[in-house]
Amino acid sequence: MIRKIFILTIVLSLLACTASPRYGSGKASGPRKSKKHHARVITGVSSFYADDFHGKLTANGEVYDMYGLTAAHKTLPLNTIVRVTNLNNGKSLILRINDRGPYVKGRILDCSYGAALKLGFVGQGTTKVKIEVMELGDNKYMKHKS
Image (cartoon, rainbow, N blue to C red; front, side):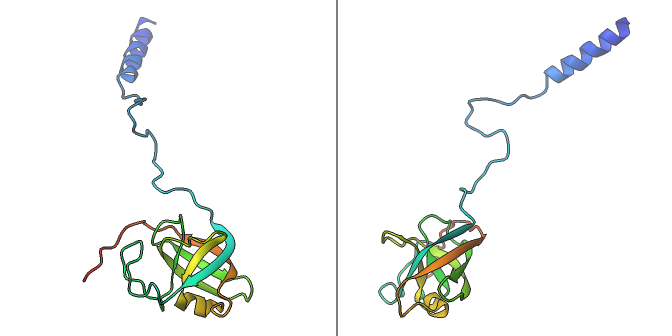
């Protein structure tokens, strides 16, 4: 009986010496979420932008190519890959978010001219779209090489 109490005391002593979580240190004790939560499917109005911005730097640091397949979104991490579907004609396209915007109330996406052309809404200027997030981007700024 004394031997069992002795072993139990040693086991409890060893367990008491293990590291315990530290509270108030500012560090998370579990896995940290580095990416902000974003909806996986978003619907709303998309517009496009073209020659006024062609050749200028985008928010992620690359040169804007109006004929490329890219888009601007206000909050999705830069370099996020999305499938955009024009809900008026069913055309769908995979785009990369490389810029910020649109800054017009009621719009959720600003496609490049090339993307708007393939999605079939250049003539209308805007269209209702469904955005499906395929892969969240790294939100990294790309240094432009001159």
